[in-house]
Amino acid sequence: MRSNLKPVLLLFGATGQIGTLIAENLRDNEVLELRVASRKQKKSAELAKQYGKSMYIDLDNSRSFSQALHGVNRLFLLTGYLV
Image (cartoon, rainbow, N blue to C red; front, side, top):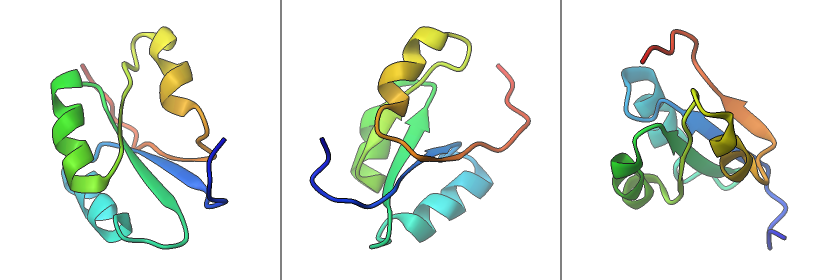
């Protein structure tokens, strides 16, 4: 159980142009807890250093959803996802 009552936002696309702008603006937000999602496991550690918490999620593999979405109650996903 989380120790704070802030809503948790999971942001997809934090390495893209729009996602980076959103992540940078929300990184120090006191109203919500920011988590960023990456479909590349190697990027997760780097993103965690930048934004606090990073989750690996493979949008082509629904088995990765449960852990990444645990505790999340807000989501930002820009359409146009391609592999």
